[in-house]
Length: 412
Image 1 (tube, one colour):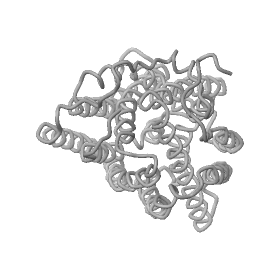
Image 2 (cartoon, one colour; image 1 turned 90 degrees about the vertical axis):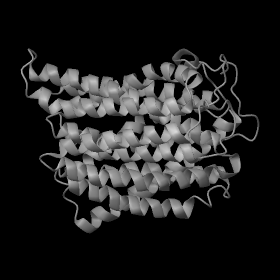
Image 3 (cartoon, rainbow, N blue to C red; image 1 turned 120 degrees about the vertical axis):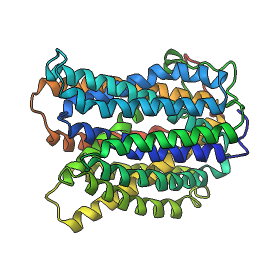
């Protein structure tokens, strides 16, 4: 795909959605937990999210070829508003009598919310990664990724602070509605005036499917790592957030303040790392980052409300640093290989594989949790301990000195 010389459409798209994600979708697992969802229900929702993501990738590819970037941006906002509408409707629906038992209604809600979340995630993250790939070069991937992570942090954490306050307010519902509509109206008007009718320039021949993704092999061992990353994606973003929520005594504002405080440390970390990671030997950085990531999961298994404030703060800072460092190193390797390989197709293969295994793994895990009535958050430390051991498998991902392009589908 061609190079994106004017990055302002990317940053405006990223800023608006980062703010909106922080308002409510960021709180998705704890919001549902606060509305009587158990661990099995949240896990089922995660499984449905992966399924919704996979089902949306085909329509996204067709839209990316047929629609202008402006229309693609606008459509992504539609799916965000749909997700928020479903979330805000759940408390009203759960208290109404519609002929279903509460448990059956909860299962249905978990699936519907997950599918809506997966659809929105597919449109937002795939568009975002495509734009990011178009504005970077091999020599600056780490710096550019660090820059946009700092940029994301400013808007995402602002949304998280506002969202936490609104969730603790008795009439916060109207605040969510007003802010979402205001951002949508403002951004669509600005897009009509400032963003051209130009498309994202995907190759017309590009048509990645779930089947073709499972046939994908390369010399960098991308295939098993993409499957592995699917399991970790929501273990980190949903289960770990739920653990923090419980440590904060199920207080949304306290959770929001804690996350934002950690984000300041996160921003400093990226500021220090982003300009140097491109200059250091890549394999050494990736090795250290992966080992630290495994350590972060081991530490998560010991974080609970019984830790003193000082010990808890130190543990959270270490976890934040290790996770941030790993994601910076992993994404640098990922985008470098995407550029050297097949561009957007490589991004789509990653999405198909990661989200498919996410859907299968967490749906199966939810079935296991449902079999043990009363399974609680006490199961989370066990999952984190297993994750610490499994994280070492990220070391399979390698950047070869030779040609990284895909091997034939029947390669070993």
